[in-house]
Image (cartoon, rainbow, N blue to C red; front, side, top):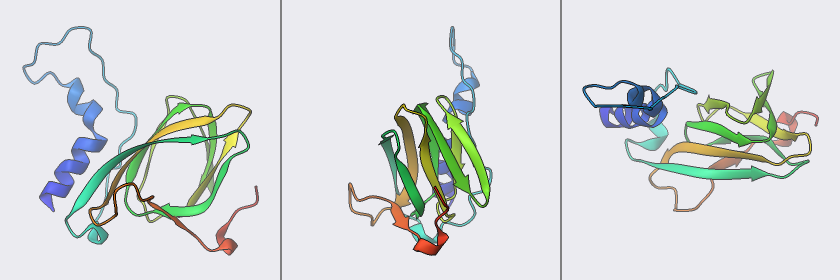
Length: 148
């Protein structure tokens, strides 16, 4: 489990550790923590074995993802566009440069705001048993969907 926490910390806090010089000569280098998942809890579904995946996601204008969750926690970083994100009764609009985290098991949904596509980078910790290239999204029953 220590390895999992160490890997998670490395994935989610890479910018924070890069900002500290720790004796390394740096010039013209800047880092800013964009998002941090403070408490991951126990990832028993990963059974101590996991894979790290980075996926570039594009949502076309008018696009959406109905209620779903993921097979593991992750960090999302918006590259372009605007996205409406709904989770646990709270709505947030994310824009290019914004980053946020998801624990994985929490139900959420999203949709494109405006006429530009959304592009985001999706960093995930997933079960090692998940076949390479297989999606991590799990749908939620229709009665959990919000009106669009």
